[in-house]
Image (spheres, helix red, strand yellow):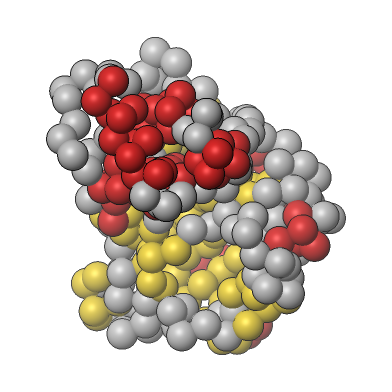
Length: 286
């Protein structure tokens, strides 16, 4: 399948979708094939929604695409070079449309980075991931860092940073999870994954009771490795360098791969990497 430059939803494209549906392929597989072939998520989803209804098997699949939700949005109208957060002037270094992603500079000071590392170091343990079949947590071979969580508002430093993040991203402070600190030594990594909770997993409903779906991620770099350790976005062919004080923000308006927010932490090749991660929810996180 070949994508046209303007990517219109053509009759040819709709016929191809119908053929795939009739061959027994579900909406998720068809969408993944379209994204791999170069179609944008917006066009691919529109084409699916226009083509799948009317086909008995495909209609349910098309309607099963998770609905869009409101996501945090920094105030970037007019393409400003800087954003004011009340206590700090943050640089806008890069913006990407698909995925919805921004790289910020000067979000944290050196002293703030040092303080977070010092407070986190005694509390580090092997990082866990959410166990989506039960809603609990588990050790995952794809994630080989050590980490810990600060409770929201745990101390004055955390309160200040959470207020800064809320102003930067125009999102209620109470909708954020606690700040997670991660430490990566040489050879450690976090393989590509999505941060939203998979709606198909049996444990997801219990996870969502605490504040709804995750809708955005902010990764802040506290300590620079000598080599490696970038944040990679395979589908966007993008790697964000782990520069101390900088951050990468990305939002996902539906819990679906069409957001192209597949990302990971590349292996650290030399030195050590420290990051702080803030996940944002739809509603107040309890």
